[in-house]
Length: 75
Image 1 (cartoon, rainbow, N blue to C red):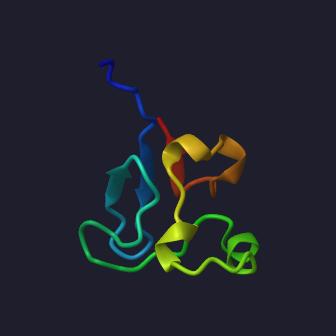
Image 2: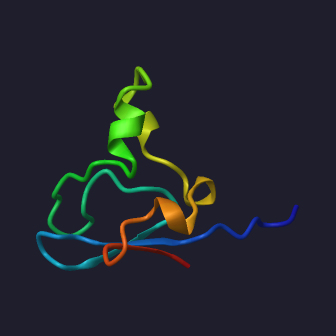
């Protein structure tokens, strides 16, 4: 079985200014535990998802245009 290369998402926490790395949007900072809102929050919140964690996308589902410049990067 081949291992799929996933994009890494890097996000700077606006509270502690530490870099967080993941293959999915994080719900909390890995360092200070500050909660995050998902990218494109206003579009997603009106889509009637039952589970809050369903608002957070995989890095494969995101494109550069979805990111907030200065806080996120896809690698």
